[in-house]
Each structure stands twice: as C-alpha cells, then as structure tokens.
Image (cartoon, rainbow, N blue to C red; front, side, top):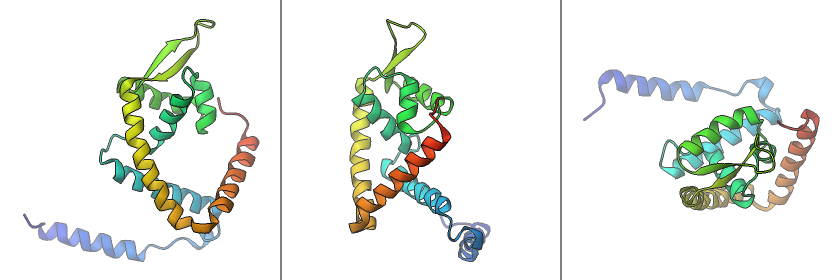
Amino acid sequence: MAPSPLAQKAERTSAAESQDLQIPDSFRDLVGYYLRIAQEASFQAISKGTSAEDLKPGWYTLLTIIAENPGLPPSDISRLVGRDRSTLTSTMKLLNARGLISRRRNRADQRSYGVRLTVEGEAMLEKLRRIARAHDARLDAIVGADKAHFIAILRRIAEELGDENGPST
C-alpha cells in the first residue's frame, strides 16, 4: 500500500530538514561532540546488526566481563564498564529477568553477591560476539592504519577523565 499524500509530504519535509541541519559552529572543534556522535553512530550500527530491538550494544561488554570474571560483584563490574552502579542496576535487573545472568550471594559477606552467566547468557554472548567482530571489522576499515594511535588517544582520554572523576560506585 502506497503512503498517503500526508505521509509523503512528511517524508519530503523530514529529508529537506535533515539536509538543512548543520553542526553548530561552536561544536566544530569539540572532541566531546564527535566522541558522542561517533558512539551513537556505532551503537546504531550494532543495533541494526542484532535485528532485535531489545538487544543493547552495552550488553556485549557486560556479558563479556561477567563471562571472564564469574562471581564478580556489581560494584567491580561497574568500574570495568565505566558506568556508576546506580545506572548499571537497571541493566543488571533486565539481564537477570531475561535469564542471561544469575546472582549468587557471597558466602563470606551475605550483603553482597556475585554475578555469573547462565547457559542462555552464554548463548547470547556468542551471538553478540559475532555481531561485535563484524562491527569492529567495519571500524578497523574506517580507522585504518591509525588504529593503534586512535586507541591510545581514546585510552588516554578514558584514563585521565576517569582518574579526574574518581572511582565509580
């Protein structure tokens, strides 16, 4: 069924508006702006690769960290992913509700718990790993021979700003 005339007009208007959009002059030399835009573009590309709206790009990082560090408490996971624990909590609850992770009380300290992947979590991680590898190959092609230098700069930004902001909790 063909789009209605009103829908066609909206599509033309939207396309015309996007051509008129320009980066504000005050953003043209801001590293932070381009970091954010690049991250969003990268996340959108990964999301397209998952073909499921409920899969989030950040899950790959979380599931990998949990797989490689079974029993790690959420506070340590939050430090490794660079997110404070309060924003990580909702994602962890969702992963738990989906059956991708399990939480087990720490025998030495009943107030804390460790996190592990379930069998379903391992299967999801493998699916996300394939998507991430394909996506990283695209990024490698974009960055090219400058990859080592680019990663070094990003690492320096993360380390210096992370140190400046103190540890995440």
